[in-house]
Image 1 (cartoon, helix red, strand yellow):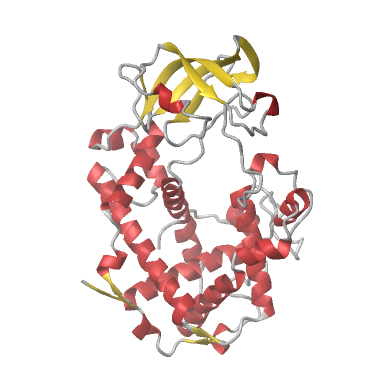
Image 2 (cartoon, one colour; image 1 turned 180 degrees about the vertical axis):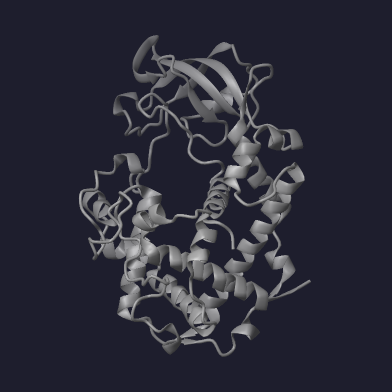
Length: 393
């Protein structure tokens, strides 16, 4: 069973890889950004969210971890949904027959591993000043924008520098593409035309502008080598507690094995969703899942469902429906049904193994016993499922 901290880091690496390295850190008031589609269905960014002032969970007495949530809502100290016997609703009679997969569908491809390694090495980017900017580079620049020779408000980095990535960061026209071929230390003009509709600053709409631009440096991720691992061994040991990662090959194998297990678990949960019969999802289970989805929503967007509704007019029911809570609740019931069938019970030693701590008082104070125990219980169920699953070569 992998420790919580290692699991969280790997999930973060996967999410970053899937997002192309994440959002760039830029000065919003100064960047010549593209006009935004105000009819977009994407959630707004978290910085515009109002401050959360009230709990969003039915039980205000549970641990909150500073985010107004009771992580263990509806769970007993062993991680089971309190008062729910999942086997009363879940048919596991043909589970083993359903867990048959092809290795080609489970095995991670080289590009996935390469992307995850790239996300890791990006933690140790180095500033390069001796080559020209290329497409895809992360570059630190300064600029001052002028229209008819006159600088305009919000069109300068004021010498603070800002990071952009060619082909990723969204700037107007072909602003960033005009950086290609120039070297750090160069100062040159970038010519652009603002969109005819530019809600960020309507006074600039449709106008031609010239940005005097200076390239400060290029951020370049190093190659994954044994030397890189050894130079940051303390970090590596912290990121992957309990793992023996001393070389580049060790890290590649770790990512391969982790992705393989992740893909297998995902395939198993697809079987849960599509083929395992659940006769009914009790209302109490739905409430527990709704509570957890609200926590995950807050973690992702930085605002509560209630605040999203107040600030932007989205209906809470529509937001929660988009999260497909019933499917998630069915999956949780199947996990618990298997735990009941296999008589899985969480011990103090299980807690210590999962957190990597001898004293779990801090974890329990923040999350409650139920949340941690459910994580442990589901991990043990996942281990059991991987044992009985058949993966054909």
